[in-house]
Length: 159
Image (cartoon, rainbow, N blue to C red; front, side, top):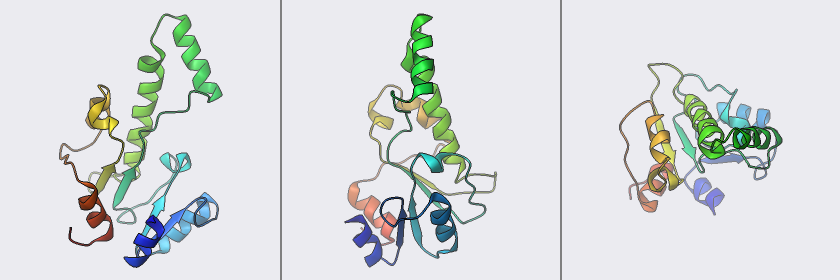
């Protein structure tokens, strides 16, 4: 449905598993496209660079908590437990906020950069720890959108 909506609006949708190709190929296609949306997975959270106005919006579907099954993460959590600490508060949450900052950094690399950050994960407003993510944003201009407002924003059409 998203692919058809974007196509009808003249926007190319790029994503692993949808359009095919390696992350490198998807990034190259994205950089050379006039209007494209790149749906990225964990690969795009760090180590990628879109200088200048190559990137105008970062859309975060889920807050970037690491899977509890990830071996290194599980080991860090176990160590925190053994030390009598809360693994979520001392490991999972700080790592997720750091990754979140890195994701925002894809958009805002220099003080002159500007753009839009769209966060779809409702936990940013409903969970007690959501404030930590909001505080990690480089600007204080935060607003909420309805689904139809978001669709209008993404497609460039009036709601």
